[in-house]
Amino acid sequence: MALKSVRVPPQFEGPFTAGEAFVERLFGQVERKPENGTVHVGGERYVFMRCESLFAAWFSALAETFGDDAASQFIYNTAREIGRSDSVSFAERQGVEDPIARLASGPVHFAHAGWALVHILEDSVPAPNEDFFLHYFHPNTFESEVLAKRGEKRETCACLFSAGYSSGWCTEAFGLELHGRELRCVAKGDDNCEFIMSPHGKLDGHEQRVRDTWKNA
Image (cartoon, rainbow, N blue to C red):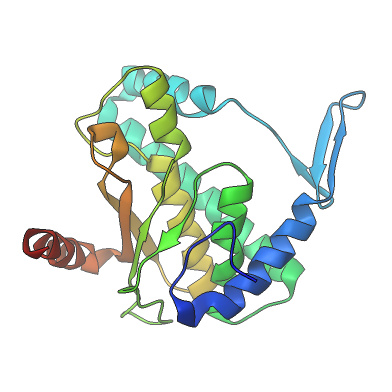
């Protein structure tokens, strides 16, 4: 059966198919009880929030107080810790230890929770060591949609939650300190939101290599 909520190179389809089935079962168990003020997904308490409030309003408030750079770092780090926590929880519930299997449910959960679609590209090397490299698109991130709705265009990449959450998830899945970086962003006028992820000290080198491929395309 073809994957519906994530796109991956053929060699990863097996574990991602299992991850997709697991997450779909969880999201098939949505219990909304407004009389109790609760929403549960697969037995876990969830909170629905308007994306504009979560991203644009929060960023504006932080930036006004602390400046744009500090606001960006705060949101990225917050999302990264959320991703780390979710990664641990999903691995425990699914009963998997293999890093690829632990990775697999993340992009599917990302899609089901409304963050964005994940498209992992062929040049990715999700190795459990310092060679780890992930190259991926997030089509239709909630951040870029919110900014488009507000008629705002950014000079810098805007998908801070998306970059932080995915890197936090992979950090726990692979037992490595990994960071994500957005290279192109719809909110800037680019065609897609494009990201890389690796150990922090290797991000600059990977970014240069990817940008060189754009020039030669």
